[in-house]
Image 1 (cartoon, rainbow, N blue to C red):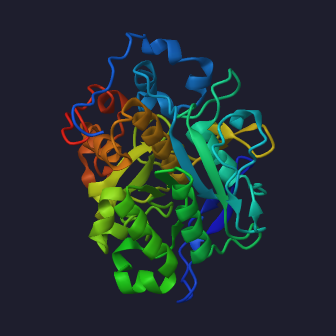
Image 2: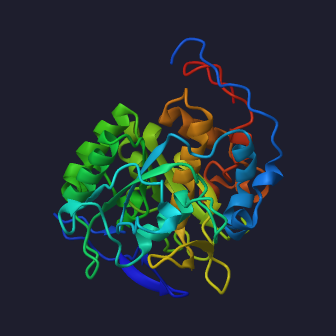
Length: 367
C-alpha cells in the first residue's frame, strides 16, 4: 500500500508490489416476527444540504431508506483502519466503544494520516447541519488502528485481533478499506495462509458466527480485484459473509478512473459511488483536523457499503447481518451499464429497493 495525497487529503492507495512470504502488507427471532409498518414520511425531508453535499447518497437512494426508519440506530460497525479522531463533533455519540490502537498498544485511537477519519465520516458522521453526514448517521463505530503511519506495512496479527475485538464488542459489520496487493486470481488457501495465517483463521470463525466483511476491489484499474475482496474464490465458505466493492464516479454514471472491476468476485460484489479525481469530483467527508475534505477511490466506496448495511440492518433488526447482506446484493440495480457483471458485479446498490418490503421472518425473506 502507498499513501497518496489528493486534493489536500491523505489516502491509502493499493500498489502492486511483491509481498514477503511471511508478512502481510495490506493496502490500507425466529417465528412470525415482522417489521413494524413505518410511517409515511416524505423522503425529501431528508434531502437537506448535508445530504446533497455527500453526492453518493442520492445515487443510492438513501433518503427513502431514512424515511422508512433505517438510519443505523442500534447497529455497530468496526472500522479497521488508520484510527479515528473520535473527538470531532461529527462523531459525538457515534462511538460504541473506544476500540484499540495496535500501533501504540493502548485503548482508543488517534489518526495521524486521516484515512480512517475520512472513512468514518462516509460511514457514520453525525447529521448535525454541518458539512455532510454519513450514510448511517445514527450507527455507532468501534475504531481500530493498525500498521505504521510512516511505513504502512500492516501486520496480520493486528488485523485478526481487530476483527475479533470488534465482533466481541458487538459489531457484525467489519469495514476494511484496504487490501493486500496480490491479485485475487493468484490467491489460494496455502498462499493466503502463508501471508495472513491469523486473519484467515479469524475470518473463517467470524463468518461462521455471522459477521460480514466489506473490502474494496482496489485502485489499479485492473479487471480483477485484489486478494481480500476476492478471497471467497479460494475459500467459498467465506462468501456468505463477504462483500467486495467497486467505486463509481460520484454521480454513479460509470466506474471511476482507477477502480478495479469486480471480476472473479462478481457474485458478492456491488457498485457504489466512490468519487473520482479532479476538483470537486470526490466524496465530501470528515478530515482528521475537523474540516471537510474530498476523498476518492474504492476505500470510501467500501465505507459507503458498510454504512448502508448498518442503516438497512436498523430497518430490519429481525434479520441477521448476513441476511441483510444478501438483501442488499439481491436488490441491486442491474439495468443499463450495471448489467455488466464483470465490472459491476450484482449491480448498483439501491437502498430504496432494498428497504421496499419487510421480510416475514429470519427464515422467510421476501425480496
